[in-house]
Image 1 (cartoon, rainbow over the protein chains, first blue to last red):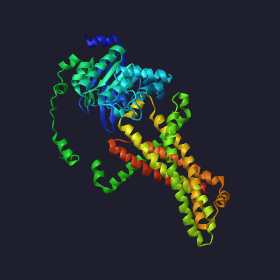
Image 2: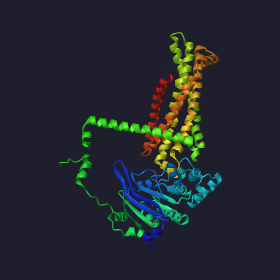
Image 3: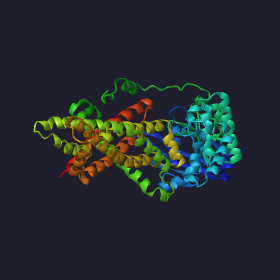
Image 4: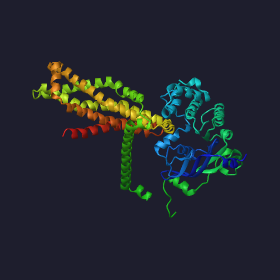
Length: 276
Length: 271
């Protein structure tokens, strides 16, 4: 099944056009274009410092970009008013790298917080709904524990339960396998696949773990130094002849280009004289 | 250009001054925005179906107010006794020891009670606010709140501000009473002044305005402590060390702001 032919019939959930992000005078993301379709798992890959975490923060609407547009579920989040963004957020879930559970609340309270904020359900219903999601991530026994009492894998699963408690149409996942042992991270991969199949979510995963990416991805986007190198199916990515992608796939160190002027500037901390 | 400013010490100094000024103005603006947003949520939150949580506010009031009560009582009693000792010692030169009642009544209600309460609350609760929000910032909990669709200002700053605005005047009033009691106790021991008489004369010496002046000041201090604590918390970056730095900075800045604001207010209110 060709991904390109398939995409033509599907509805886009995320549309990023010419996204441009800069901190001070440094371009962090440049000319980023990306479309994610309903019901697919898109994995954003890239080395450290490639801009993938920054990209995710902008996709979540945590900052406003310098230029370009980001449409989530058909709404341009770079132009939405705060109230409209608030409405949109009920349809979006996010699981942070470190879990970002609220340390002052129990696991159950953490999972119930989005319900408390966005719905007018009674306490009992909220309790049942949060337990349903805790069952999904296999944490029913941990409802009354505090985040500090959980192991790394449990924190990630609790964060996932909180992210999906509103049954979002769109789920973001930052580094699901970072800091976990292979067994636990494989379980999380299974869980992500199950969420797509049973709840028909569109899922965007940021990771640098190759095994995990190849296992869960429908399509993979490669980010490098703030630009997208390629977006394609797993097979297309494997077949790519881009040296940077091949370096990442084969764990080869990058060949560094040395610029003598630049080197001198770094050592002395000043600009080389124009006459030199 | 860059090489020029690096070489010239005056240019470098001017540049640093400029950067510092811009940063200070920026920070001031941030505090103002934080205040405006908190007040907005307190006033209009319910209408947008995102009200400031009552339970959080009560918890915060417990922490800021009720738990601080014993230490406020001890400190203001001590201040009252200290003022009595100093006052009697000074007034003895004029043979007017009994006038100490007026001095204590006015200085406690107008100055010492709000000031001692504010410094204590800045040290206890302002720093705790900065540390808590800073830790949440590092753990991405603030981002998580925003992604869930919860305004961090409504969730964290507004309840704290509300609690401070209610509890600071209450604590200040307690400090008024305890300070005057301290003065009464020492005067009774040293001058043999009957406590009942002391309190009667205090009542004669005090206007409502004197007590109000202290209470109004405490409201201003409440705003300063909350804003400086929370703003420093939100600004944390760089791990546990950053949290420590923000906590210290919030206490030092709060106390500085309190004393300067006190001076300005006293000048205006005493004219």
